[in-house]
Length: 378
Image (cartoon, rainbow, N blue to C red; front, side):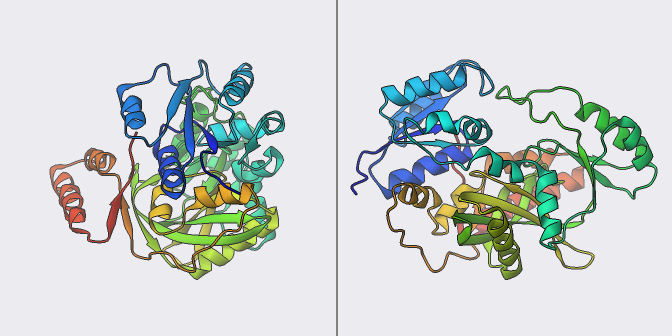
């Protein structure tokens, strides 16, 4: 089958993940890429992206992904553009998965069914799966109200972590130093709030976890019918915020134990598509502890691609039932940086002159890395 000029609609692509997916597809084949965004207008940056030929066109849908008219508008655009494939990015993936049954009447939608996606989007479900598979993870409590939190606050050790059950990265994560801190974070977390794209991130009660000291590591996975065909491990060397969040300086590694755990999770859920499985290597016992699974393209997708694993292209090939020539290896020791955001972390609290100078020197020293690429920015 000739994939030349196949039309792909990338929803919510004006971020690191979306630009990585677009660039990978453009490099692999002559696809026509159209971006759909809920931003209010096409900024000068977007116009520069179009002029650079990374994407062919972009369009705005007013409102947000939870808007009842969003699906109708997306279907109209898809039909007008004669779209062959829809690839959702970031928070759009959750909503697109919910309306997948409507969209796939007109084109292919490259995201898992919502019932299966919820196994990962809801962290409490993910940790139940980890328990069944005997995969280590932080001790977790699921309080159902403020009274249960008050009781729990007096019984657990600190620091502790409060997390929204649905969400990813640093969004919906709070660190508590003592019982009053935990109660304060809980009350703030349960107030209705919207993200920048207008989605209320979580309507469930937050969960409480024991804090795990150690390094953040991930497995990036490409899966077909419950088999992890490809897996790459990486370490987050610098995150935003520095206490833990999205990776802004990462390096590829080869950690067989993490890959083993990832395969067990993928097999249990019978996952199809891409996923990022997050771990912390506990410095107290050296054992990895599962944190969460991100069931969509992630912020460091560009590092996976530059390491030699073109997940977006493999996803398209699989959608059309075409054979995939999977690489046997990927580049280990490859760094990827996001310097502008990395620079901002220099001035993160806690703050004093010596700490600023130390962080600044570390920032400059990373420009000497010979095996390094840089994240794409919108």
